[in-house]
Image (cartoon, rainbow, N blue to C red):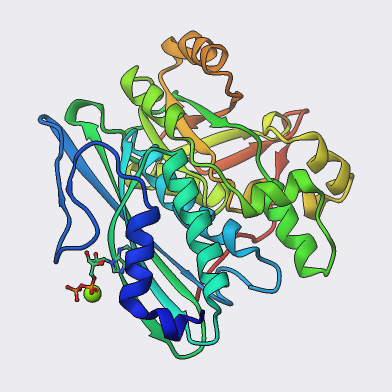
Length: 327
Ligand code: ADP
Ligand code: MG
C-alpha cells in the first residue's frame, strides 16, 4: 500500500494505534486538541526542534528509524537540561509524496520506540504532504517542580563546571561521513542515536546540585557561552580534562583539528552544568550512584573575564573558529 492509498487519516489512525500513552493524558490523538494534566505545583516545560532534510540530516546517510528516534532525543535533551520529567510529544510531519508507506512506518517506528523507552506519550500533531523534502517538527512537554527548575542562568564565579559522558564523537562521525568514510560504530551511534540525559537532569535538579545547566547541542564552547552570557561570566577550562571515548582517541589520533571537535563539534547531547565547589563530593557520589561519567572540566570566573582554555602546562589553547551556524 502507498502513502496515497492509506491517506492522511489512515496514517493518523496507525499512529494512534501504535503509540503508547503514559500518565496524565486525558485526551491524546484523535480530538481537536490533546488534553493533558500538569501535576500540582509543577511547571510545564515546552520546547520545539525542526529537523529538515538536507539541513539537519541527509537521507542517503540516515536510517529512517534512527532519524525518528533522534527527533525524539534532541527534544527530550532540552527537557533534561531544565531538570524536567519528559511527558508529551507533538509531531508535525511534512511527507514527500515520493516516500513509501514502508519508509514512513520505519520513521514512525523509530520515533514511537524512543518515545516509549523514555516514558513519553505522543499526544498529537499534524500531517501534510511536502513538495520535495521531508520535514519533522517536534514539540516536547515536560514538567518540573517549580522549586527544582534549572536554568541556563544561575552560575556564580568560582562554581565548578562539569560535563556528562564524553564529547566529540558525534562531530567526528559527521566529519567522517562528509568525507565519504564509514565511521566506527561507537562514533556513528553517538551521531545517529543520541540519548537524552533525562535521569541525570532530574537527579541534578532534585538534589539542587546544578546552579545552571544546558545540553550540548551546538558544541561545548558555544553552549558554555550561552550559560555564561546572561551575567557576562568568564570560565577557565582544562583541555586535558575534557572526556573522550577510546574510539574518538583512536580515530582523531594526533590530528589537532579533529581533536578540536570536542570543543565545537556539536550534537553531543550531554549536559554541561555548574556546581558550588562546596558540593563537589555530591557530584562524585551522584556519578557513582547513577553510573554516569561526570567530569569536572573547569570553573566559572568573574564577570568580564574571557573563556580561557589551559593546556597541561598552564599555557593557553586557542581554539579555531568552529561551531555550526545556520546563516
Ligand atoms: P485538525 O484538522 O483539527 O488539526 P487533524 O486532522 O490534523 O485535525 O488531526 C486529527 C488528530 O490527529 C489530532 O488529534 C491530531 O493531533 C492528530 N495528528 C495528526 N497528525 C499527527 C501526527 N503526525 N502525529 C500525532 N498525531 C497527529
Ligand atoms: Mg491538523
